[in-house]
Length: 80
Image (tube, rainbow, N blue to C red; front, side, top):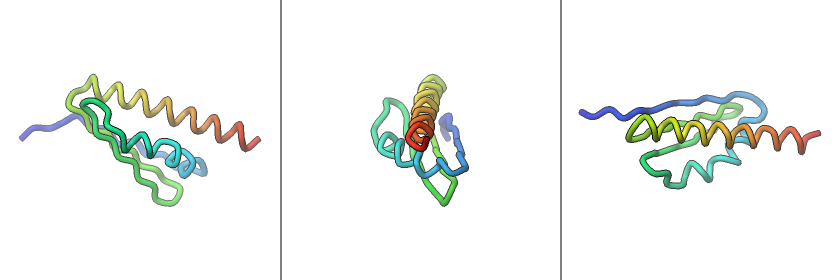
């Protein structure tokens, strides 16, 4: 049995739906060596990342965290 590196990131709060809307199209795209899914349940978004190796997982986590930060920043800027 082969185990692949994975990570589960959970975000809660008022921005969860906005962040989900911003990154869910990215989750559907193919990233080399990585599979990503995003789910939204009320004010909680769950991002699941699975990769063929740790380097790919780290790169995917870094990318998604940057996109999430941008989505949060834009939501705050528009809301002001």
